[in-house]
Every structure is written in C-alpha cells, then in structure tokens.
Amino acid sequence: MTVETLEAPASTKLDACVADAILGIDTLWGGDVMNPSGTGRFIADSWFSEAPLSPAYTHPAAAVLRRTGGVAAKEPDRVAIDEYLAAVDVRGAIRGVAEEAVKEGRRRRAYLKGLSLCFEVMWDLAMELLDKGEPVPFKRCVLASTGREPEPSDPRSKREKAAQLLAKAGYPSTDGAGLLAAVDAWRSERMVPAKSLPALSGAFIAQYDALTQKNLMPYLPNVLRGVPRANIRFLPIKDAWFSGSMNYLGRARRPDGSPEYEATYEINASLGISVPEFEQLISHEVVPGHVTTFAYLQNLYTRGKAGFEATVLTMNTRAASLFEGVANNAILIAHGVTEVEQLPDEDLQIGVLLALLQDDAKNQSS
Image (cartoon, rainbow, N blue to C red; front, side, top):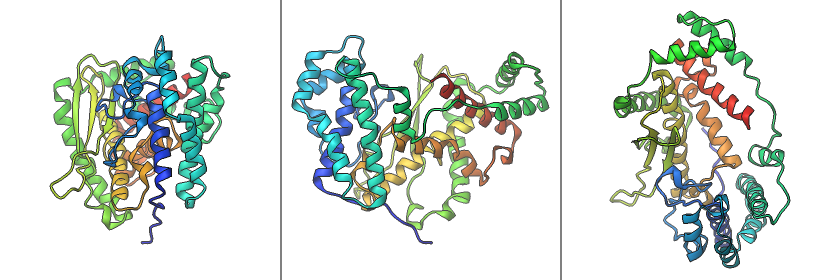
C-alpha cells in the first residue's frame, strides 16, 4: 500500500506562530489547555509535544484571563485583556500562521490556512464582545469551521427509519409527540445503570477495539498497528452540567520515552442513556473515533510525519469538523459497513439514528 504522509516538520517561526495563535485565542476566551478537564478548555484541545509553553500561556495576564473567563465572562477583566494583548501579539501570530503556511507542502498548507481562517473569526468575535469590532455574521462562522454555508437540517429519512424500527420493536407512533414517547419508552427499558458505566465502558471498548483490528487496520499502514487505540479512563462526575467530554492528554511517557497515548472521558454520572446509545458513544469518543484519531496523530508527530500543529489540536475549526465526521461514522467503520441499516442489531440501529438526530437538532437550533 502506498500512503501519502503529511509534510513535516516546519520552521521554528511557524511553530511559534501556531503556538501563540492557538494558545492566544484559547487564553483570550478563558481557556486552559493544561486543564485535564473539558470544563476548562476553549479551543486548545491538547498539548503533548513536550515543547515549553509559549508566552501566550505563561504571561502573568494569561493566568488572570483563565481565572476570570476572558472575553466570555459576564464582566470581562478589560485591564487584564489589554495587558495581555499588549504583551502577546495574538493577531500577529494568526497572520504569521497564514504567511508561513504558503511555504509548506499542499496538505500542511491547507490545514494551516484553515486554522488561520478560523482564528480570524474567533479574534473578530472577541473584538465584537469587547465592543471593538463589527458584529460577526453567523454565516461567516459556519463557513470558517466547515467550508460550507449554513443550511437547515433535513432529518425526515432518519426520523422515519427510527419510527419504523421502534414500531417493529413494539413502540409504535403516529405523530411527532408519539414518536418522542416511543423513544422514551424504548430508552427506559434499556437504560445503563449509573453504577455500571465503568464496567460497561470497558466491555464496549474491548469489543470495538477488536472490531477495529478486524475491519479497519487492514487498510492502515502496519506502523500504526502497535499504537494504543483506546487508552482511556472513564471518570463519572456527579451533577455535571455537560453530558460528557473526551480529554486527550498524551503527556504520559513509557520508560523508553514513547507516548502512552492516554485520554480521559468525563461522563455525567446522572446521564440517562440506553445501552445501544452508549455503544455508539464508545465508538464515537474512543475507538475508532476520537481517541484513536488523536493517538494516530500523536504517533505521526513522534515519527516526524506531522508538524507541531498536530500536537495542539483544536475545537471549532475545520480539523475539528473532520474529526467529528470520522467519529460519527466510527461505528460503521468498526463494523465494516457503510450504512446504518447494515449494522448487525436493530436496537443498535435505533441508537445510532437517535445520535444522528441529536446532531440534526443541534444544527437546526444553531
């Protein structure tokens, strides 16, 4: 098999611009890339290169912004923001990423240009919140992070298929309200007991790692076969305000200096989720979804096949949109199929359809 690798590594100047742009935007919005919890992050989703943190993170004013919430706070600390921006040229770093990107190979150049485009929007949004810039249109935000204009969801086919499968399973409906009731009834009889979340997560991770070994690994380079695809700990959190958060850490090292590729998943201990939906969640968040994706990127970096930017992965960007697309299809990849109706169990098909319908609802509400 011939595999085209990412072009790597680049200039020190580019790496410095990437670090200052990502950490600068993250800090400006109150994020903390070193926080092991998803509750403390904004766009910077990892830092595992072992490179020293840049002044965009270490400047004294940065700590104030992380503590007070940056521009996202109800009452932003404008003195700290002004001090931070006087010391850290976040806007210049964003321009630097775009300028340096043109010197790189095709794939790396496209990735970096996509990052800089998204950072421009996040900068302008910050300035809007500070009353220092014009309002940023919603359309511009969507274009930056997806490459496409916003469009309404069309969930009809998925909803109809879910209704058919639910009726077949003994939960018929004739209208929208009836369908919601059918879903609730189906879910209530398949709920994951809260105290069983750790055990069930371990069982599903093992199952999906084996499926990935069977149905995905034959298509990937042999060098990736030894990379841990699912080194993750589940951390139930009582009364969390979110349903769950995958936090890729990647900073632990083995005695020989190689990465352990570790991650955590914070999950709401009160989360009401069915077993089939939880199975889909494992494929999405862990293997062959997000944890596997991040581990492979870390491995590419350690082998010199990807640049520094692969170690400071971002949310709200085109890369993040790609990662979500991979994760949404991870359950199909694991089973070696291309359509939901090809999954081996109809309960699992319902769980996947419900997850996809949630995405439609989020898109429609936005």
